[in-house]
Image 1 (cartoon, rainbow, N blue to C red):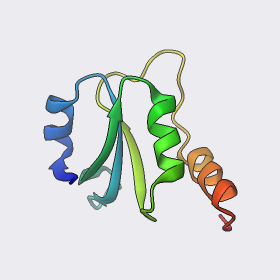
Image 2: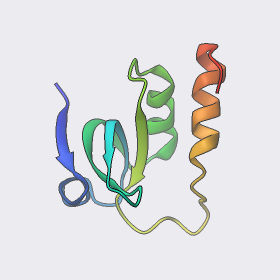
Image 3: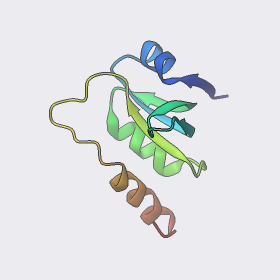
Length: 90
């Protein structure tokens, strides 16, 4: 069973890892506050692949360290990738 954690707890528990979060909660400025940890890995592709397979309809990805220099966070691409694979509109 997955566990709901705050972002601070996620950062401490899974340092320098990508984390797939289900039912993410955000604060008024749009920052992630907490959510259900569905998957975590140092390998971003593993987390993104799990994002495609998850039955959750509300998900977010989070990197618990400094974003690697060769990586850009573009949530809309992940969103589009998921919906293109499950056949729903974005």
